[in-house]
Image 1 (cartoon, rainbow, N blue to C red):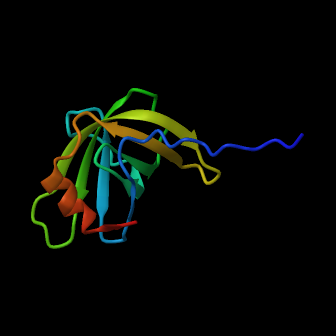
Image 2: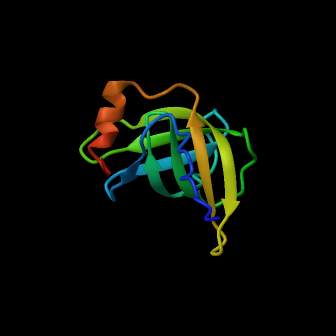
Length: 118
């Protein structure tokens, strides 16, 4: 009898957008806005979370503060998130998935989406 492999169901709440080079992010451990910027790069973003490459290992459920900086925008957009997972990469960096404590508003995501693509 032939076995049929079913596709893996996507459990994401929102569609991801890949980041363009113009979108920059700062990632700080904790929510006080102090400390070393851990962000190496941003991979993708949605209304509910983000995937980043960072320079240090973070624990699951660790709170982080993110600042998104877009070209021609004078003010960074600050967001608090919680680390959902963290995986070590071969080059000594780490890839994390983080869920925003509060989903981005339509207008905030629209601004960021200008610097992201499908």
